Length: 170
Image (cartoon, rainbow, N blue to C red; front, side, top):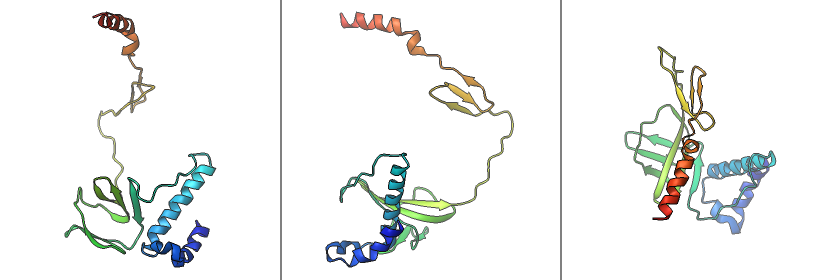
């Protein structure tokens, strides 16, 4: 990442890559961080080799780590290099905004705001029990009880085969 970000000012001055100078520099740096993370994940064996995307793909996105301003009363966001943009609020913003990701999908533009805030850890009160529906175990309760699956398909498989044969003859 450090080597790539050092080359960025030279790339912006290159006559063949003038389109880089039109973009906000921190968005380019975030893209380089994503690329660096993709290569680190590849070399550590966690993922496959990074795939290059087309210039105009179905899901384009860029991220602002700082420099943005959010006006919740006016429902506007200031994006550096773009200006004020109106948005439709799906919920109120809780906490301090850390970064903003602007995503282009087939049906329009979307804004995702990552925030940071303190939240209390819920305290278990009473006789309530949490339940997790899984694949290996049908149900796992918070008290450690595991309930095995009933295997309804195995139980009724012979009857199912018989009924499918009868159906195929009709």
